[in-house]
Image 1 (tube, rainbow, N blue to C red):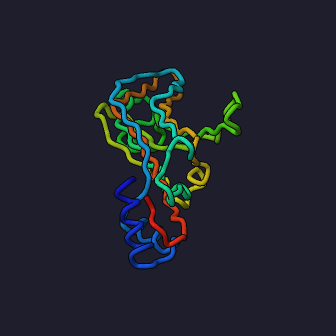
Image 2 (image 1 turned 60 degrees about the vertical axis):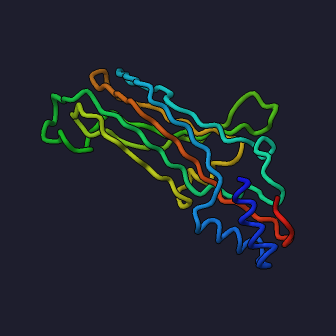
Length: 199
């Protein structure tokens, strides 16, 4: 973040650009704040599996301690990676094997918020599908879903919330196996429009 602060200072103080223009330049240059979590835990479940696999906690603004003049703006995107497969066979509707149709193993993204720092209960935003396994395939397959700023779930992601990846299956015979997961959350930066040094 210190390097981003130096770049922002060069534009605001050195070039006299307004903060909103500098924020756009940083965004176009791919300079933003990111939180991510990765796991290589091997997990397998069946019989209506609903298992938490990975969680990333977004720090609050107070916990972040950003350089003076920098603030977090809106969430830009949430990227979810998952490497998984099902049980490798299906006895019904075999013509659908090798497709994503009627696949009963998948992953879901959940966002939770704590309304107040002292609150004990979290507010849970309804889950959304992150990936679906290829039907009747024993090979691990990489899935990536990017929820961008146009997706309603991204608007719910704010400092202090948590993003969680759940592995799911439906019906007793369907098995979901996973060996990798990643959640990466990116936020735009807001630049204080003082045209002073950001440090």
